[in-house]
Image 1 (cartoon, helix red, strand yellow):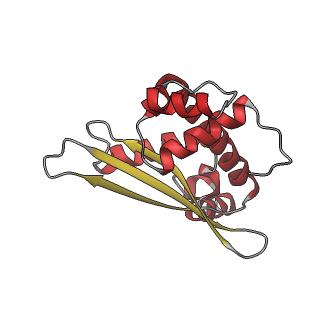
Image 2: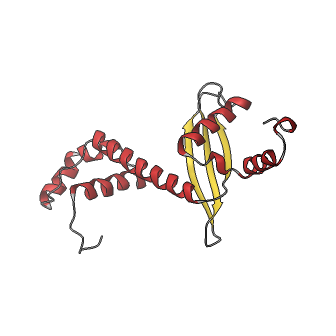
Length: 166
């Protein structure tokens, strides 16, 4: 921590929540009487957060990160997406993750996790998975920047409407 920076309640909550995640601690850690004794002894001015506060701070952090990724996606020209699905043997839990990849202005590969979700009943199968991907990509933008779609759209523009069905 930078001693020149004056601690704030918001900053404390963000650092506390990051600690909870990094050390895989329960969201209820701030409700510990032992930790409260340590805070009282050190005369720390901030009130320890409840599990609900930790969850809300985490939601705010995630929303800020999501907005930052969306900003990044708006400035890149072409995006490559990779998508994978994981499931357990009993098919009880299925998850899908999507990464966006692009080259920045300094010719460096940029990769961002843009979606990770629990799959609904049929979303791990064929066209249902494609629909889920399109819905997710449409909500954050960048769907029009997929390389192959750009190539198809350019080809479509150069052909007469009757020659190409899209």
